[in-house]
Length: 142
Image (tube, rainbow, N blue to C red; front, side, top):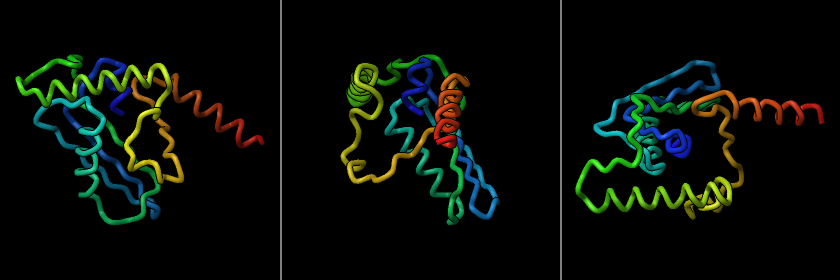
């Protein structure tokens, strides 16, 4: 979500988590944050914090949505050097991803992951979604 937000020049000040459980019941909860976020790790931490409020059931579908979007990406709102470091790091990672592809640089914690979670809904349009549908259709015909 963070990369798609940054690619569009956005920051999200709200995050909503929606869960469809295996028994077909659902749960969703959103929160407006104190300040807009664009760094993927911060978005993940806030999403996880909200997800921990969900009922402890097996999840069939999980959706994470950013809202209260603003188009002031990379705007420094504080004088703290930590905020500038996060901005510079995020810009550098976006340049690497643009040149070498998504997930070229990732947390070491992900090295042991056996499966990759497929991102099925694209931010900002249906263009990316049509590629996913086409590839799934090819796989089902094989």
